[in-house]
Image (cartoon, rainbow, N blue to C red; front, top):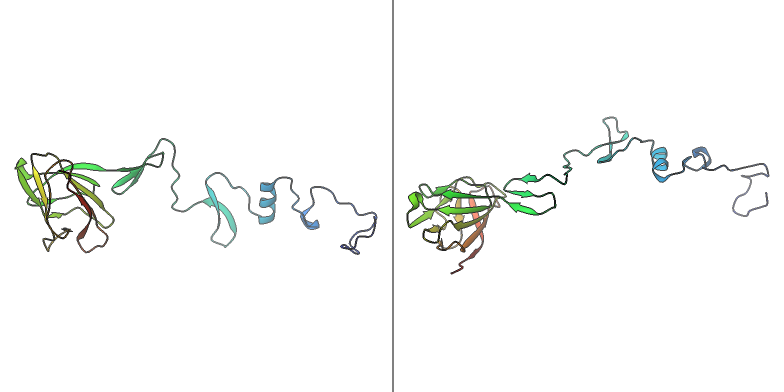
Length: 194
């Protein structure tokens, strides 16, 4: 073997390097990338939906991700007051709620409101079911029954909107969000679609 200015004293004319290059010769001893990774990290056995983590002794191992959700093409993921479809579309939950003594109990996003006893008008003072993180979109179930969302009644899970807002057609909406755990359901927007 000829003289190479970069390597001195490491090789003689009888030195041969086999492929794949063994780990003790500076290689991986493997012919594929995954096999090389497994050989060099001393961690093997990774399968689909596993991540590299540490076990209780601090050794590197492949394992299922803690708390991870793995979806399938035929399932929906329920997330509080909305769902995520198998295709990634957000689907807001909906429901119809009849007011009783100025209150409803809902965590649904789309809340179609109806008056108590189907009266021609009614007030919504509180939403006893609202929790932190709720997005609430109110409308009336009928253009012949007006629902007025009352501004800040001072008690309970009350709506904070500056002034009362009346849904007098099925196209009127008021959108709220409960950001804090202090019973205040804050107005994001309202739309009076005459």
